[in-house]
Structure formats: structure tokens, C-alpha cells
Image 1 (cartoon, rainbow, N blue to C red):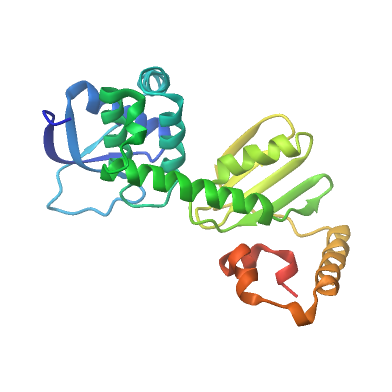
Image 2 (cartoon, one colour; image 1 turned 180 degrees about the vertical axis):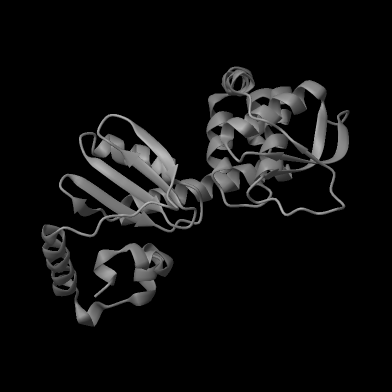
Length: 253
């Protein structure tokens, strides 16, 4: 990318992965790099900035998606998608540079960890996957209606979709809702298909009577099996960080 043109422009887009791939298509076609890339929801207007809004183009996005796996490698696609779910402010420009360089160098881009943006993409991917793995064990479903279960989460990263896919595979016939309260997003699954919607104006039903009974039983079990003499809060918080406790039934007694 040494011969590419750097432009003093901030690219604004809709914040979706398809929108990001559309930007990648235009950037690589024109061999130009923007100063910054930002989702429209996170962008703070600045009269010094020159901005350009990029509309999402699904045809371009699909071509780039296929092209990443074909011309770089599947690992690059895997890295970039998971890094995109990160809450890091500079994720977009780093992933863009990583993929543009990848189109030039192929799969060996993943071995160039001394390169700052390659290292950042790999680091973001690791943090996202680690949090997703952790919440697969810490997420707690509660029954809010007959055969409908609900779970609230407060993740650092936007992991609601991979987390939802995990539970679809585990509970393919179960209706459920996973609610990301930080981002006001709900992952809805009806036993066949899923969708992710804005949850700002959604009212979640109260627990069923059976759910209240099972919650009390679970809390009693949690307290009973604890060995007072071996209590180790520091170790507990290492495996079950305190920031997640607000969504854990057993920690609400």
C-alpha cells in the first residue's frame, strides 16, 4: 500500500459489516486510504472534518466477502469479522488496512505481527472470541412465557450474533431471546429462523411462576454447595468477572 493515496476524509457508514465491506471495495478499487472510518451512530461531528457517507451496496459487499477467502484466506475473513465485533474505536481503519495489505500479500499477512494493524486485528479477534466463550457459560436463560426463554447480557463487545448462533446449535427447538442491554439489541429465535432487532421499545414479559420457583431452587443450591472455609472471591472474579454478575441469577441473593 506504499503507493496508495492518503485522503483527508472521514468515511461514514451504517455500522454494519456489509457497509464496511462496501467501503473496502471502493477503497481498494481507487487505491486510496481515508483518514478515518466511523459508524454514523458513533461519529461526533467536527467542523474540521471532511466527511463522505458511503451507502451500503450488497453486491459489492458479497464480492469482497468471497474475494477475501479466495484471494487472502479463510483465516483473514474469520479474523476481520470477529475483530469487527470489537468495541475498539479504531477497529475499522485497522481492519481496512489489514485486508488491503492482505489482498497484496495473500495469507502470509497473518504472520506479520510486527505490523501494528495486523497485530491489532489479531488482538481484537482474540478479545472478542474470549468474551464470547466466557458468556457461553455465564449466560442465564429465564422462562418469561410458556416455551419462551430470555437472557440479558452486558458484553463489552458486540457478540450477540455469534452467541445467538451458539445457542441455536445447542437449543435448535427452543424459542429464546438474548438481550444486549448495552446496545439495545435483541437476538430473537423462533425455532427456525432468527433476527436481530432494536430493543428500545420492546417490553419483556415478567417471569413465570415456575421460573421463580426454579430460581429460588438454583440460588439455594448455589449457596448450599459453597464451602465457607474455601471461599476465594479473587479466584471467583477471575473466572466469573463482577461486571457480569448483574445478569447471573445466583448472584442476586
